[in-house]
Structures are given as structure tokens and as C-alpha cells.
Image (cartoon, rainbow, N blue to C red; front, side, top):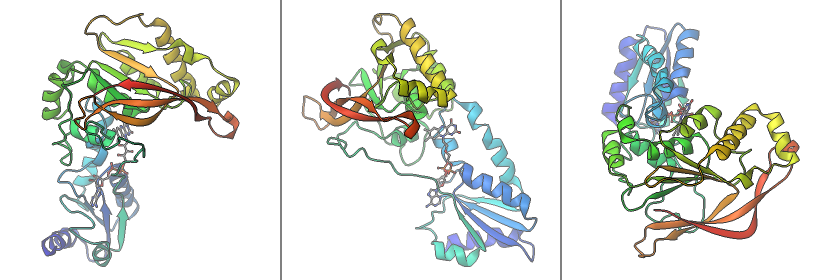
Length: 338
Ligand SMILES: Cc1cc2nc3c(=O)[nH]c(=O)nc-3n(C[C@H](O)[C@H](O)[C@H](O)COP(=O)(O)OP(=O)(O)OC[C@H]3O[C@@H](n4cnc5c(N)ncnc54)[C@H](O)[C@@H]3O)c2cc1C
């Protein structure tokens, strides 16, 4: 504690002018760096220390954004310029709450900005969530991005050919793409070497992306959807029955160009997909109108997940009252996975 405090004190006192505004930003992700950048511009006498619990800066730009999206990570050049400002310091390995307390920071600085992100998961609260092989996207993404908290995750990618991803937003698409992309293509990216080695040995070739609502409500954006649909040799399966849209769906699309674009891309992919995959071909299945009810244990009772039980859903509500919500129909379907 004393060492940390003296590190911080030395940092701001060495660079500080006599009358400076001493600022501590906790967290070195985009929120922290943009705050520091604006403060440096707005206050000529601001002296800023950015602290982070990790030894490395940039938060989820480093450990969230997909390794094959280098163009998104370019923003770190801008953050590096901020860190090079002589009135700004980055101090890694300092955790608010254990290395230093908020009251200590308040004594040392005139301004303390808390920009430490969101580092926990939202549980589904359904049975079987603690079975082995059920991972939050945060754990899995941190694993393939080399975040120190989850380098040891070692997800079992060898004893199954199927993964189920719950959700159809951009992070779900990232996860599905990393699982289905050719390892030779991943090798040229920023992916962690332990993850690349595991993915080279992976037997997973089938990924289900499951959403509670329909293709109009899929939460991804068109750019990311186009990218996954264009994966080499990919077989895409989307049931055409899911495209029977209602007046409320039409209304939702009228209100959102993004929703309309995503819907059109899914509809086109559904029409143009082959009838059956060829042997060994990577498969991506978009499954709509399914709400997870429970995770099922594998048949060998090993405590590992072996599938997911879903309740089929239908949509209620009108686009005018926000968006439509999924309600259960009392009909169920199980999907096997590892
Ligand atoms: C898988 C994934 C993919 C994404 N892809 C994109 C994308 O392509 N494009 C895009 O624009 N956005 C993307 N995002 C969203 C984007 O990464 C986040 O919105 C953004 O990083 C949030 O910034 P932040 O600064 O609030 O938090 P974070 O980036 O999470 O930064 C918080 C920092 O605080 C530190 N910290 C936490 N607790 C403490 C503590 N107690 N003491 C000290 N430090 C602490 C953490 O180590 C971290 O460095 C993605 C997110 C995820 C999860």
C-alpha cells in the first residue's frame, strides 16, 4: 500500500507544476483515456494519473475487441499519444479497492474519475448454468484475447463438434467467427497464442446462434453479419419459416435502418444457402424464437454440459410501445452441444 501510494505521489509530484489540478482516472479503457484527453485539453494545469489493475492499458479495446478486427484497435494510437503527454502518466498494477482505497485517492487528488468498466456477467438464472463447459462470453473472449484473469480457462473444444452461443449480438458473432474461422487465418491476427493452439486442435465445426426473438430483432449490425456470412466454405442454415413477419415487425424495421439491413441480409442468406452441408464443412445455424430454459448435463453424468433445453417463443407487444418481447409458448426443444 505504501509503495503504491508513493508511486502515485511521485508520479504526480514529479510532473506537477506548483499550482496544478491533480486528477486520477481509475481505469485505462476508452472511458478513461477519452476523459484524460478532454481534461488535458480543457485544463492547461491538469496533471493526470491513469491507474489500472492490469499491467497493460486500453481495457476492452485490448481484451474485448476481436483479434481479427485490427481496424477497431487503431484507437489505441490516439490513447498512446495521450499517455505520452508530459502531463499524463499511466500506472499499471494498481487496483482500486485493494492496492489503494477511494478515500486515499481523494486525499491525494482533487479529482477522481471512476472509469473501471463493467467486469462481471449477468447470469441467466436457469438450472445447469454452473455445469462445466458453460462459459460467459466475457470469460471466453478474455481467454482468446489473452486477458490475465482467463488465460487458464482451457475451454474443451475437442470432445464435441457443436457449440451453442446464446444471443445474436456482435459479441456472439465474434465468438462464432473465432470458433469457425480457419486457424491459418486466425494465425495472422492478434489472437493469444494459447487460444490459437487450442483452436487448431478444435473439433467444433457447428455453431448455433440462438435468439429469443426473430430475425427482425437480431441485435447484431450489418457489417459484422456480412463478415461472418462471408467466411470461407461456410454452410449457413436459417429456416425460411422464421421470416413470416407481422405488422409490428414491419413497424420496427421502418423505425430502424439497421434492423432492416440485418433482416434483409438474413433473408438473403436463408434463400441462398445450400440444402445440406457437405461432410466436414463448417456450419452456422441461426436459430430464432428460442428461450433457454435449462442447461442439460451430458449423458456420462460427468458434470459437463451436453445440451440446452429451449422453450419456443412468440412475440408480443407493438413496435410503438418500444420493441416486441418474446413470450414462451409452452413448447420445448433440446439442442445437443458440448
Ligand atoms: C467482446 C467485446 C467486443 C467488443 N467489440 C467492440 C468493437 O468492435 N467496437 C466497439 O466500439 N466496441 C466494442 N466493444 C465495446 C467496448 O470495448 C466497450 O464499450 C469499452 O471498452 C468500454 O470502455 P470502458 O473504458 O468503460 O471500460 P473498459 O474498456 O472495460 O476499461 C475498464 C478498465 O478499468 C480497469 N479496472 C477495472 N477494475 C479496476 C479497479 N478496481 N482498479 C483499477 N482498474 C480497474 C480494467 O482493467 C480496464 O482496463 C466490445 C466489447 C466486448 C466485450
